[in-house]
Length: 279
Image (cartoon, rainbow, N blue to C red; front, side, top):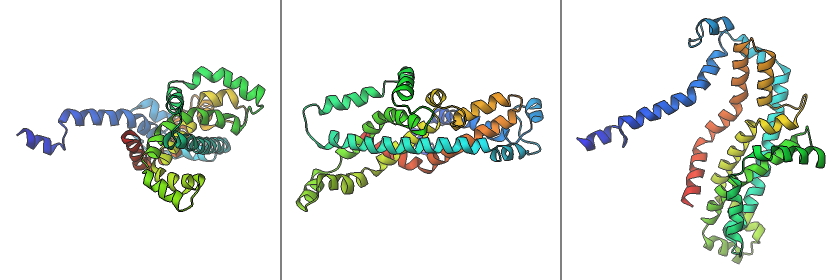
């Protein structure tokens, strides 16, 4: 009887499925509420906050799409996120490769520096970063001024995830490539990078989404037109505090790119994290 129940529920009991459904509801509930709220009028939200659109109102989303500020914020977020992702993944894999393939005295202590970097929150260094970027580097209110610190804080998780992939590459492949005349750079480019592609995709998505959702650092470093979408959402909410439906529409459209990227690559992300754990 017990085995039959286990087979019916696919290895988990009703409590497991109930907790899973509760977790999904808590995760997707606010997203669905915001998305549907953008199709309602402010009068509908005030009369029945938990109701469905009746009738459906499309003017909120069309107003956001035709707003030039939204596209300017989206451009800033996209450029900063792309720079952050490229820098974090490129330098991360270059740092993870010797930590995985080479044998030297301080290899493990150096790797522990990156591991400890996971425990260092960006908020602790926000004021020193502001002084460094604006006064010393003169990169305030620019894409690079925000992207480079974000890439630096994405490096630890990038190295930690990529190192097991690079360590799992058989030494026989590397030795065969050396015998065939390949250089160390050639092995890194044509052997290590393709075989660690799931890890590269995983770290790239994590860096992109983290940069897209960043708020505190862009808030301190960016001014006027150089605003990102999270800052734009805050500004729009302040300027149109009475237009709740418009704010929900603006917020929903602001999170769509990162959400679509995550959903499109979710299988590769999971396989990348599994490979890192196995390694």
